Length: 114
Length: 114
Image (cartoon, rainbow over all chains, first blue to last red; front, top):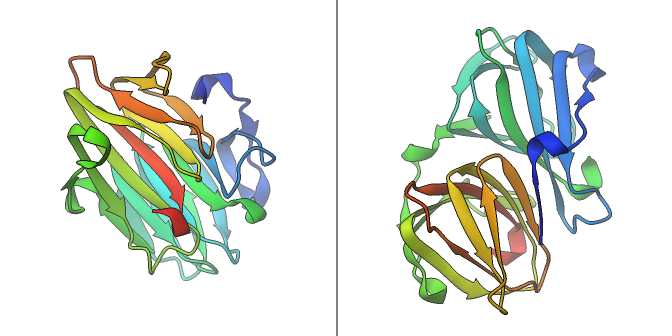
């Protein structure tokens, strides 16, 4: 059994997809994870992860704050702390923090598709 | 894209392994989840999930409270809100809430092994 406070895990900037003010921490490395990878993201106020898509799903749990999810058409949905989110394979998605507090969420992906 | 506040998801009692004061909510059903299942557990003060093991892993994030993780020898480790936990396949594990507040955590499992 392994456990770490999330603050003990290296925090890296996310810059793909025109992302700003966003960091990722990846829990357990891919050699150790048999099937899926747990990551924790933070998006500071006014930060974003640009719209993108891929052929694997996301399963997300919002830990803190409110985040606007955006698709390729610009449709917007506000999701908040305590919500689960499921993004299907190949579904375009981006994230914007238009609030005053840092958004934090857990986002799981299958191992082969980090 | 699908999103729900966790309180909108059916909460079911967990009674396996001599568990007490414990509930589970399963996010998205197994037909929809391509690879893994996200569940949210709550264990009330003095509640527990008895020690057990299985040949699949757990990846956990503690949302609230402090929980004692116990193995088959009775070894104990306290894990707290903000911690990630990785339990390897076939590693015996149980959970006890010896604190005053409800423990809540996300626990992911591969799909074929709900």
